[in-house]
Image (cartoon, rainbow, N blue to C red):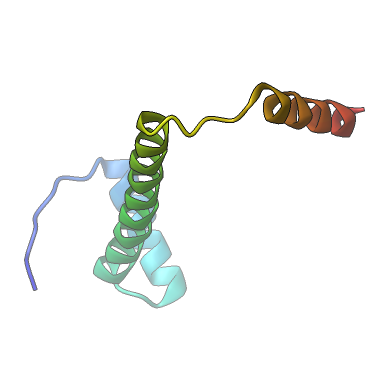
Length: 79
């Protein structure tokens, strides 16, 4: 396991300490949990962007009719 040191703004450090006390978890546990969630979300987003770029490079685009159908569906749901 790696060790990393970082500086937190006072308000974040205070919130982290309060949450740790309120939940009975350590500050490290909460920070690792938050970082794990963030990294998973960002990795998913990057993977989806890369997938979309590959599809675009391959010419895999929605047809005019597919775009119009989607717009019509969303327009119908707004009313």
